[in-house]
Image (cartoon, rainbow, N blue to C red; front, side, top):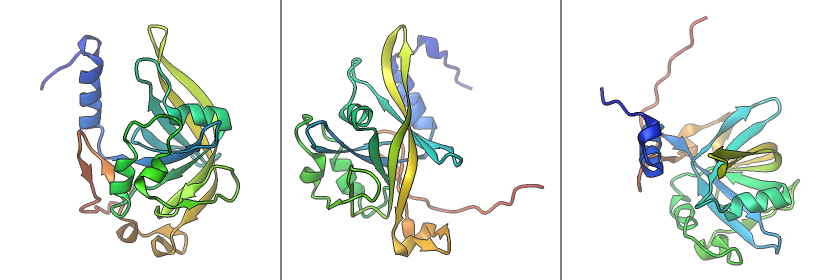
Length: 202
């Protein structure tokens, strides 16, 4: 086995280790509103379920040289955001939204995605996603190393969900119709591929 002491690795080396081994990762395409009302859209793969009671998801947004990203700043200001599922039909547009733009420019406009009004929050979503979850900020934790904040861990409470009719089947999600895309390392993504069914022991 190749052994690595993470205390001896650079930030880039740890990033490559994590993104290459913690795979596949679900992608959250997040929309948020700036103080000036600009709709921001960005993808994040440091994303997961936290709990079902209350219905919480987690979103970790890394800072660059200690500077908070637009999405994190918007969420902390407005206390609301929308998380969208990413699939093969919207992957190209979502990937395009990852370009670095100034806060006054909207990634949604640049990628040609269609804005969709939310039911319970002021932040709109986009129509092209088969899954859309309206969230309110539940908690925020600054991740620190040597007193320097390196990331913002955001917990969002899902207050409303929108599901495409094609993927919804009597309370269950049809994976074949959803066809979600996951993040790998580098510029690589993955589809579900083979599905393995295995019952848990009693």
